[in-house]
Length: 340
Length: 276
Image (cartoon, rainbow over all chains, first blue to last red; front, side, top):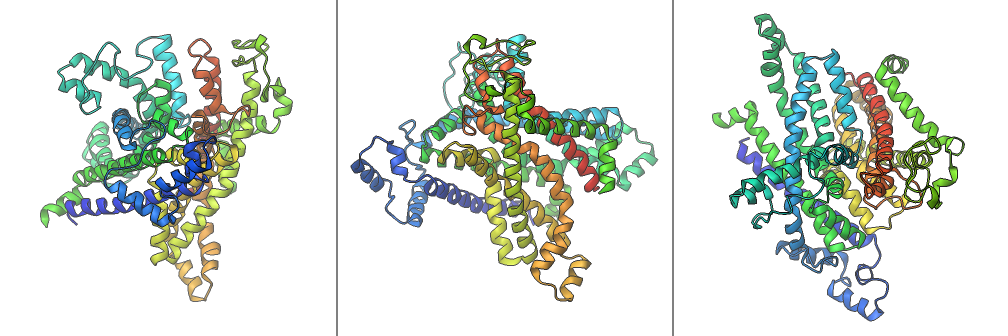
């Protein structure tokens, strides 16, 4: 199967899953809570207002028809109006998603940059003290929720030793024209290198707090994969040839283990997206979290459905990208492409 | 089994894990006897002693309304373990049954059941629980339901994969040839071979359920005041950082101790029960 076919296949199955997600979340939002019109209007609304609201929300139609109408609007990019902000849900999402994505992507990079080398080191010294040490550390990192790490890091590196800012995305004194909403891109586009540095400075603590458990996961996984590779005859052959341990670790054990590790790390992206909610609260990060928690507390059904959909879509897209990268990295898939 | 216990008891890490898990269960079981101020688990207000740093009288300090943090943490373990027990009593049986059926029967049953599982798995874990809590009232029971809803698909996936592998083994074919019923083959022949993986996952998951539950209540969507809960305690405390650091640090450490304990035990258990 060529890379393109593989890619299209993944895209198609992801679309089907996303439609499934939309059904699931739509039905959760319609079935569980009682009367959505009553919830939208609050307890003080009159019967008449509720009846009218039921009419505008199409609540008198059978649920299948309601879902059909919802999908029709969704196809036009319309997720309804948020009761929380009184704006179209899609506008809200477009405003808050970039900040969250920037944080999550930065955390994802940290996860790979720290997790893979740690795991490789652990496997290289398997059974010796560096391995035990790394195993305990990585087990610790996955043992606390992201908000606990966030609190710990803020206390140590922002309050007690003021190395990093406590809250926000960029220094208050700077105003960067809004283009993409990604500050790392917008600052560069505006030629503001100081702004770029400030944005990175603000990103480091929250992204590290967010990535810590992912670093642990990635390291444990890389270790496990590498140890499996170490048991293969190729390693013994390399040892017999007299390659140095470092060279064997890097070239013969780490590289073949990279592909399965990357695939699973793509799945860990889901945890990053979910945990971003926790980290954003601590750092007053103006992302989807504040909005998400706000709409949940307000029982703003349109916005809840929209938020879950956009997060799931992001997760599925991330996995397609990882799958694509893996198929480029994987010689078996890459070479079969050239041969055909 | 004997070998598993022997290895658990000969590895210093798993001993530490067992000690931590034991400590947490002990706190939860005997909260009434060991908590220095049992009445502080409720809505007690004691402004004279509000916001006190750790001292001989209040070992871990007090919160904003003057309740002893140590006592509240001890009682919060009851809530956390209760949550873990309920979720792990409901979610694994559902997931295991569906995974067995999908994996063994195959065909359309497989396709439909596993696509439903995929749908649940493609909503990031915390987000699904948040969405469910969003449309329901934030109570302990609903929080348990929300976490259960996000948990069963992982067991379905796990058991499905094992079942697919076991299905073609000789012992299954033998049972089929002598005319054993499908139910017998699934639950009597294949299921026992899934147990090591299930037990390992449940041990690790006990910690993760505590972690997710505390995350929900941290966001204000789980257990409600005055029930003591580790996540809500951290959340309350963050407003008084950095001066009253003990209000966030100790409940945070309490979560970590419990989850770390389960992780240590689960990790060693995995090495023993699933040697590959």
